Image 1 (cartoon, rainbow, N blue to C red):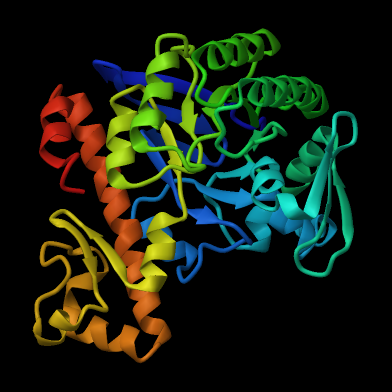
Image 2 (cartoon, helix red, strand yellow):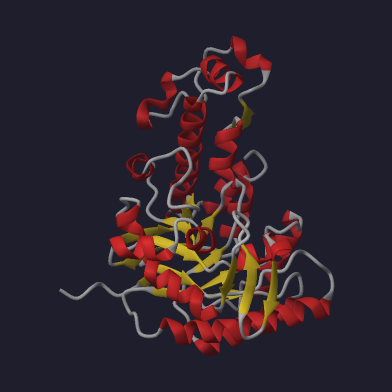
Length: 370
C-alpha cells in the first residue's frame, strides 16, 4: 500500500492565527503544534508512551548529535530512528545548522564542503555538507527534514548576515536536490536574514523559487529580545505562503508561543519545558514556580490541582521540593512530564480559541501571565 503523501490543511483562521492539520503517513499533527525535543533519540526524563498521553503528536531529533553518537549506520541498520527509540510518532530532524553556530569554536565553514568540525565528544573530525545532512536525515528515516543552513549569532553587521543568508540559500538548493522525490516525506526551507527586513523577505522569496513543503524561520532565539523576534515575524508574516506550514525554530516560552501564533506561526520546538523540568522550574496557568524555593516546604498543595492527566496532582509542592533538594531523579521526571503536559494544554487551548474566534481574548488574558 502506498504511503500517505505529506499535506497541510488550514481549518480556521482568527486574524493571522490559524489552526490546521499536517498529514503524514505516521499520523496527523494538529497545529499550532509544540514538538518536544529528543536531541539524542530521547526526550530527557520522559518516555514515549507518557509523551503521547500529554497530546504530543510529533517530536524533534538532532542530526548533529545523532551522527556523532550513536552514529547514523547504527540507527539505519535497525530501520531508522522510530524503531531505534520505539516511537511511532512523526519525527522532524533538524539539519545540524544550529550546532554550526552553537559549537562554533569547534568548526569552520566552507561554501562547498559545508561545516568542518571536531566532535565535542572526542575531537574526531566531521564534514557536514548539505548533501550529507540530507543523507543522514533520510537514513534516520525522519518524516520532516530541514535544509542545511548557517545560523549566525545575533549581530547588527548587515554584510555578515547577508553573506550568511546567501550561503544558506546555496545550501538550501543543494539540500532540496539531494532530498529528491520523497512525496511521503517533507523538506522545509529555513528563512535567514537576522534582524533585517529586506534580507528576511529576500531569503523567503528565493526559497519559494526552490520550492519546499514548509517554511521555517531560523536565526532567532539566539540572543535577541522578544520584541526584536516579534518584529522579524511582523516583517514576513504577509509574505509567508498561506498554504504551507510556518515553523519558528527553537522557540520558546509560553508568551513567545502566544505572540508567534498571533503572527501566523504553526509549529514550535524548544528544550525549555524539559530543561526547566530537570532544574526545578514548573510552568503553570498561574505563572512559573521554582519548586526548590524554601517556601514550598510547607505547601502541601499540588502544582496544578486541575491536572487529571497521569494524576500528577497526587504530588505536593512540599514533596517535589524534597525530591529536588535531595537530587532524586523522580523529581526531574515528574516536573518534566508536568511541563510537557502544560505546553500541550497550552497548544490545545490555543487551537480551541482560534476555532472559536476568541484567540485575541485568550492572548490578552495569558500573554503577560505565562
